Image (cartoon, rainbow over all chains, first blue to last red; front, top):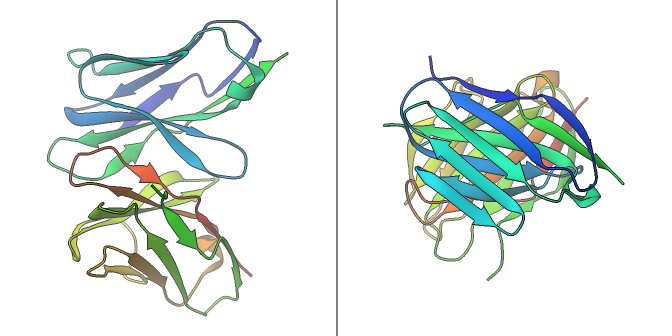
Length: 109
Length: 112
């Protein structure tokens, strides 16, 4: 069964802290996405990666294909980073995303 | 470049009715995918269209259908609405298969 597991489900931190959200999946993938969803529903694609590491501003995403694991890091977190972060994978041979349950991140000032 | 647009943004329907939702992809994008988001099930894949052909379908009943037009715009239809169909329906477009997907703002459907 193709599964995607995220941890933690909820995360509360103080402004400035380094944040890590993890995502594990069960079988081989062609790509992994990290998405951000703010209250109100809009989803923004943060990263799409199939190997290695990508960085955009204070956000860093890494993936380890052998271990079937990805992490999303936020450096110098800010209250505006408060959102739900969702990991989604495209399993090999299937052009459809399977989503993790999301991580609700709250950054307090 | 304009982003993905979805209409309507909000919709209230009664059980048994049908509804049609529309998605206009980013110009040049030929792939459109639809997703349903509910508090209980999270985000789930509905279907994906590329060049007017449905290439993939999720595990939803036949009441859920869709189509894509020659200009890549897509519609999804839900017939005989049930209370459980209340959800946020999101569409996403991409250039082609396995490219990054760009999400629209969603249509929030409430079935009463």
